[in-house]
Amino acid sequence: MKRSTGLGTSGSRRRHRALAAVIAGSLFVVACGGGDDGESTEEPATTEAPATSDAPAGTEAPATSDAPAELPAPTGEEMVIGLVNTEGGAGGLDFPDIRRFMEAAIEYTNAHGGLGNRPVKLESCVVKGNPETSQACAQDLVGKHVELILLGLDLFPDYKTYDAAGIPVIGVLPILPPDYTANALFLTGGNATSQAASAALAKDYFNATKVGIIHADNAGANSTAASLEAALDIAGIEWTAVKGGDNETDAGFQGLMRQATEGNPDVLVSLYSDAGCIGTMRARASLGITIPVITTNICADKDVIDAVGDDATGWYFAGLAEEKDTPERAVLKRTLAPVMGIPEEEVTAASLGLGGLGYVLWMSLIDYGQKMVAEGTDLTGESLYSFLKSAEGLYLFGGVTPIACGSNTSYPAVCSFVFPFATYLGDGKVGPIADLEAVTGSDLVDSSPYLP
Image 1: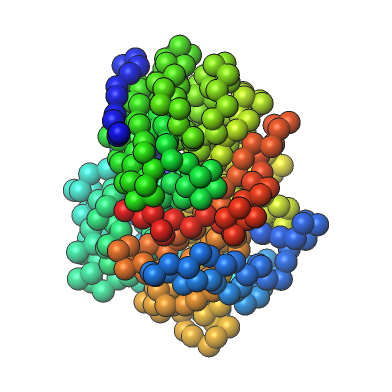
Image 2: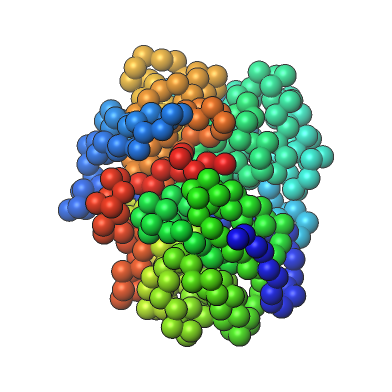
C-alpha cells in the first residue's frame, strides 16, 4: 500500500527551501581522488559500473594529464563564455557562491593553462527564478557572441534562443524535468538519478521490501519525493510517505519518525536538509529507532555531525565521496579560502555548499580541455561540447565518478548515473560504506536500473 500523510507544524514556505529540496538529492561533494597514502595517483582506478541496456558496462581510467599548477599561462585566443546563475531572486532564490567559486577557479586556471590553452573571459548574467529573466539573459549573452553557455542554477533556461544561435549549453545540474531532454549536457544527474540511486541502495544493499519516507510538504520536496517514489515502484518496493513542515519542533520530528515506522519498514529515507537533518537524527535516536536511514549528503555537513554526534549512527549519505589530501585538493583550498573568507584548513568538501557545483563544473571542463589538446583537437565551445558528448573514460573532477553523457536514451542531457555513498563511522567521522562493494559488486551505486 502506498500512502502519503500530512503532519507537523506550519512552516515558512520559502521558495529557496523548495529549490533546495529539489537539488538536495542531487548535490554531490567534491572528491579529489588519491592513493590511500595521501599522494595523488597518476590515474584513477578503473570503475566498473553495473551493466544496463542504456549505459556502458564499465569505464576506463582517463589518461594522465598535467595538473593545472604545472601548466604555464595560456597562449591561445581568448574564449568568451557565458554563465547564467540565479541570484537575488524573490523568496531567497540566491546562489552567488556558484558564480563566485567559478570566477575564482577561472582566475586560477587563466594563470595555469587556461581552458585548452585559451584564456577565458566570463560573462555572467543573473536570473531571478522566472522565465522572463532567463530569456533576457539568453538574449544578452547571445549578443555578446559567447562560444559556450554554462548553467549554474537556472529554473527556466531559454534553450530555444541558444539553439537558434548555435551556442552549446553545459550545466552542472538539471533541476526540472525539461532539462533532462534538452539540447544540453549536465555533468550531474538531478533528482531522477540521485533518487533512483537511493532506491538502488535500499534494494540492492539493504534488500528492502518496505521504505518509509519523511519530507517537508512544499513544492520542491514533493517533487523530490515523487522521483524517489517512482524509482521505488520500479524496484518493487512498497513505500509510505509522511509529510511535515519546513520547520518542526523536536516533538514534531519525533511524530514524523513514529508515523514513518508504523509499517515496520526496512529502510527510512529522509529528504530534510540543514536544521531538518539535526531534528530527524535526534528524533530517531531519542525514540530508539535502529532502522537505517538514507538521506542526502547535506546531512553529512560538519555542523550537522558536530551537533548530533553519534545520533548519526545508521545514517547513509547519497553522493558523498571520500576526501583525501591530494595536490588537487590543495589547489581547491588555496583558490577558495579567500572567497569563503576562512583559513585554508577550514575548507572542506562539506563546507563548499552549492558553490562547490560551480567549482566542480569548471575544473572538470579544464580536465576535458587538457585531454582534447593532448589529442590534437582545437578547443572551441562546440568542440568541447562534442567531445564531452562522445568521449569515453571521462570523470567528474577528482576522478571518482565516471560520466557518460547521453548514454541513457530517456535522459539524453544527463552525464552522470552512478553515485558514491557514505555512512557515519563514529567519533564524528563520515566515510565509505565498508562492505558496499562486497555486497553490490561496486563501490558506486548505479541508478540506471531504477530510473523512472
